[in-house]
Image (cartoon, rainbow, N blue to C red; front, side, top):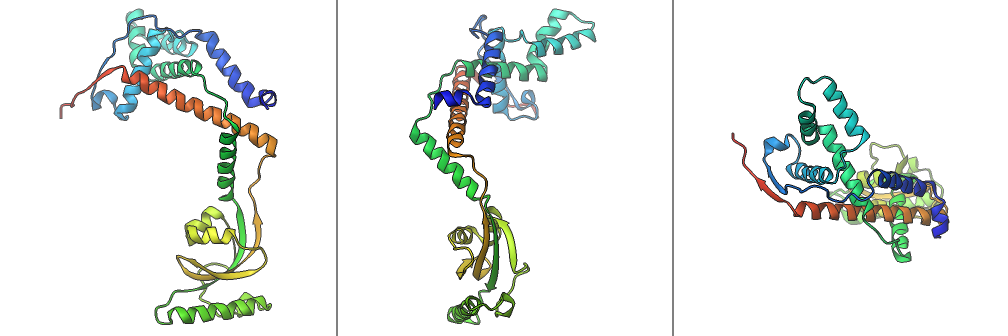
Length: 288
């Protein structure tokens, strides 16, 4: 399985990306002391969420301490600024490294790459792969397209439950004997008698329990009563088009790639939180 996975293009892409980063930043070790005190207020963070700004500030400081500013994107951005500036080049460069939004985003990204590159995740076991495949199958089920005929019998306090039940049973007998839906007494909705909807849309319009019940019906047969937010129904599923799925071997290989990517993202989030936790963050109230 591992050798087959290694031949997948997406794996080649991930490995190449990691290799390119390693060439640019082999160790990402701290080279300079870091000021780990951050004073922040709403004004300093601008329109952004303060927590997001703090995280970016931590990543920027950690990147600068590791020399990750030696980057073609950062160099190009600073070169453009220096070209149109008459001030001191070193002073302007130092300022841009801390304040320019494009440079800050690039430095934060480089630090995330460094953290990710230093994080190892285990290959998922068979149980995790099977669970992932089951979840993907469940997600695909919501994309199934149902073409069905439906007759509605509205809930009416004046007729009572028994009367509605008699109407529905009479309708089912007539439909199953070959009578067309137009010849059956029902309370129509503002929908054509035959509709085509995905399972998600069915759940949104008729309710989740109706969508679940519809999924268990046999194609070609009139069934009911099925309850929805609009009343009681008799339904005939004419066709069910399932969402396409990958062949089993490819699906398992894709599951491995998905799970490893998710684990790497989770490990990256945890490593970033650990970095932020090392800082003394002091929040101040901005003046009105």
